[in-house]
Structure formats: structure tokens, C-alpha cells
Length: 299
Image 1 (cartoon, one colour):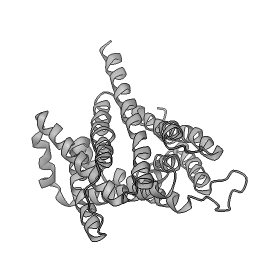
Image 2 (cartoon, rainbow, N blue to C red):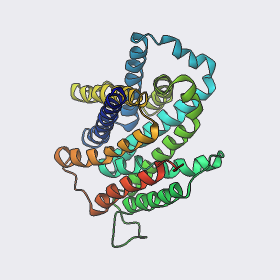
Image 3 (cartoon, rainbow, N blue to C red):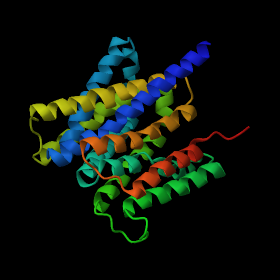
Image 4 (tube, helix red, strand yellow):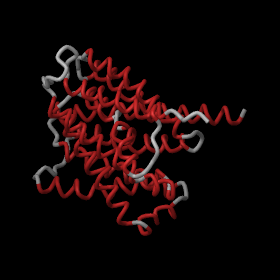
């Protein structure tokens, strides 16, 4: 009875985190494209504020000792912060300025197409089923980037550059995932993510200054940024790792793919985005490919 309760709780936390994450692409698109904020400034304010909130949560819950991980492995945490926060964060908001929230969400959440080949490079074994899932995922990404079902192979998407930038963001997140696996298992995902958000905010801050984009946001911009920092970022990660305390990553992983669906639904009503047939097909395809790429090997 207790295990059923824990599983239900984990699914609730995981699904809630995924739904919160789906709003990032809509809010980010609104800030960068509609309101004209610079993507680097949005990324800096989001991750710096979220890092502060997450670290405060760690301190309040009596886990301050876990933050010593920065002293134990400063180089690795700094590298992860640069790739996973600076690289991924700056690229995803730039992509949202240049493309639709739906396309960016789909591409970002198909990052296992990079994780699988990277895992092979570091010596991890990959099942034939995962390989098939990766190939299907690659096709789906190309379909979104191409923007057409009838002229596949002809790059005609009006959002081509933004979708390619989203692909870079997905690659950064895949590298971050593979590189961070050992240190996350040792020190805990929430601790490492919190430290990475603070560390990764430093180059974002420097880039904002060098580009002359460091400025005080308006009240409306501030409220949206604080929403991004607190709910989908800080609370989203806290909920995700609380879910991982009760169920395995293989069980939790597929919930992440609620994100493109949530983004598509919210975008229709808030950004008046038109959902292309190609995007609808790829959303369905992603559910299938993620199942293939994360399914456990039968024993």
C-alpha cells in the first residue's frame, strides 16, 4: 500500500514538473520575441534567481553540507555549469526569439537522440531498441527543422535558424546529462543543479555586460522572469528530484515528454501559434521514440 502511495506521489511530482517545464518555452518566447528582451538577459535572470531559490531550499531543509560538493569538485561543476546552463540556456532563449515555442520544445525534448551516441562514445552499451528509437528521433527532429511533410529534404522552414539553435541547445543538454551522471549520483541531482545554475549564471552575466544588454526589466518582464525562475526552474527541478526518490529514472523519464504537448496547447491560446501538421506528427512520434530509447531491457 505504501509503495503504491509513493509511486502515485512520484508520478504527481514528475507530471507537475513536466507541465511547469512546458510553460518555459511559451514564457521565453513571449519575453524574447514579443517583449523584445535579449535572450542572454532572460537566461541570466532566470537561472541566477532559480539558483538562489534552490540553494535556499537546500539550506532550509537542512542539507547545507551537500553544497560542499563545489569544494570537492570545482572544475567538473564549473564545466557542467558552462555547458548545461550557459550553453543550453543562452541557446534555448535565442532559439525562442527566432522560432516557435512548439518547435523549440519538440527539439529540446528529443535530446536522447544525442544522449545515445554520446553514451556509446564513453563506453556504455546500447540496446538495438534504443538505437532504433534514436534513428526515429533523428528523423523527427529533421522533420521539424525542415518544416514540411511534402518537401522533405528541402530546407524551407521560415524558422530554420531558430530550430538549428534549438538543436545546439539540445546537444548542450545531452552533453551535460552524460558528463554529469557520476557527480549527480554522488552528490545528488538537486545540489549539483543548484550549484550549476549559479556557476553558469556568471558567464551569462559577463556576456550581458559585454553586449550592453544588462538592464532593469519592466514590472511585467520582472514578474514573468520570476515566474520562470521560481516555478518551472526551481520548483520544477525540486519536484523532479523528489519524484526520483520514489521511482526509477526509467519509469519517470517518459513523463518529460508531456512538455511538448503542454507547450503546444498553451501556445495556441497565449501566442496564437499555428501548430503545423509536421509538429503534431512529431509530437506523437516523440512519445514512441522516447519509449523505445528509455525502455528497460527485458531480463
